[in-house]
Image (cartoon, rainbow, N blue to C red; front, side, top):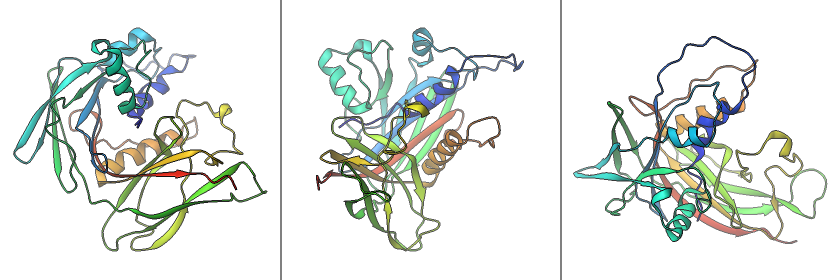
Length: 313
């Protein structure tokens, strides 16, 4: 199962790829540490892992050397749950065998078998800690003479009741279908959700937007469309608006539905809102990080996976 965990790094770099056409005379500030850390409970619990990088200036040209340089090495990364505290070990692509690269590709959702960038991650290679529902996980990072801390909890899973494919609205279509989900949201309890989709052997990608809270549907039972996720690497001109969010008949589809805590939701919600409202006339949105002393997110998921096949008729 391929899980796209390169998302935050992609968002960190994508704006930096713009060509500089004017000199805004922006003062140079020291880079900050950027965290993307994950631990998952549910059907496929994972060990904690952390991608640790340095931020880059907005107006920067990014090449292979620059990408290699943003990864932070030799950091002390620790995760604590109750009385259990572990140290995560650094693992880089250049240190892996071909078979290990294939396994890592499945975990992080990017092809590491022929990658030129020395992608690095800190992970629990002893498998002494995996995500559990209802637990709190405290992250501490020591790097570049800084100390970063963050806390995440894994809330109980609120499952989808059912999912089914139906004809999309508009003109009849014999090749595409829409996925509809049905959920019963627990009343009186704040809930936060995030979803991903995978088609065939493609990476598991987050929707856009991928997260929501239950502020407007607390305690309700209702159905809603669950759009097919698209790669963040696509340019707008490469997106076919006639097929956007729809699934091809005959395709095998996996839906990853998760519950997350409030601060984890705040990060993805503000990040995606900011990404969707870029441009000279957009309103600036401050991205809500739950990492003290740095940027990014340390987040827990409680996840369920459902496999479906889009009907041919």
